[in-house]
Length: 218
Image (cartoon, rainbow, N blue to C red; front, side, top):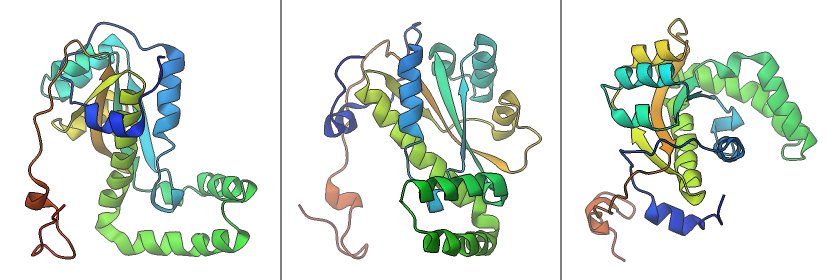
């Protein structure tokens, strides 16, 4: 891996790539990308994302079909399928591991752990049907980390938000998992061609101060 880009440069240079080279990602590079992905924050540190790396030729073809034939899935050496578990908070063993790790690292005192043991179930129960929404938010935050980390490492990426959820779940072996929801697909690899920045609207168009009645002015 060449010298990584700084965060500002990675943000401003990343483009949505639609065509990838037929070139594998070195294993150590992919591992580092995964490590940077799961460094993302999540609500209550639940880490409720369930990320599947689709790499085999057969799976890539099946995922391409589930994504309405978008060829970047077939071309890219790996596509990160970001899903999330709406019931992660109910897994007592995993939750205990989260608590114990935070205690050992000195990140959370016992008082915080005791509070979370009460607050998390209450919060999740109160969410009701919005549990899906909150789980997807966590997965999307992680996906953003992946895209920026990939850019910094010399890789390229392309988000896909067009796919059939049931078909994607079947590809990754989650067709019978009602608790698993699909957030987004992210193809990762080496760009076959560069893409120019299409530009952004003026800040005053979609950024505001305190209310939508007051456009932001630099």
